Amino acid sequence: MNENRYLSYKGYKGSVEYSAEDHILHGKVLGIRDLVSYEGNSVEEITADFKETIDEYLAVCEAEGIAPDKPYKGSFSVRISPELHIAAATYAKEHGISMNRVVSTAIQNLVTT
Image 1 (cartoon, rainbow, N blue to C red):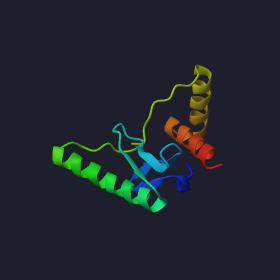
Image 2 (cartoon, helix red, strand yellow):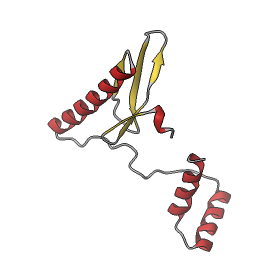
Image 3 (tube, rainbow, N blue to C red):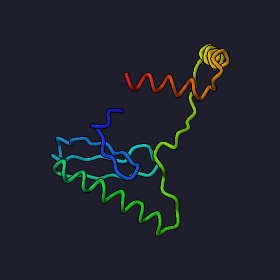
């Protein structure tokens, strides 16, 4: 993930898009089920609205006694072919590492190249 393309605040990441129709910048918080969006007419305005929106979201969750969604909790399910699964499991066994380590390393190599 190119960190320069996203807003970050209190562990949350947000997108930034431009609406040619409305002539505004807008975005939403990524990696959570709740829809949390923000907008602005400049980089400074959208950044400020993003931070205010996160603070408001957290305050509403606290006031209602519910846990806020946490972005990207670090686990997910993935479907792969049985052949790839066998190859990965064999690799993990031969190298004395877990399947989690195999997948994590593969993803790390993919997203940092």
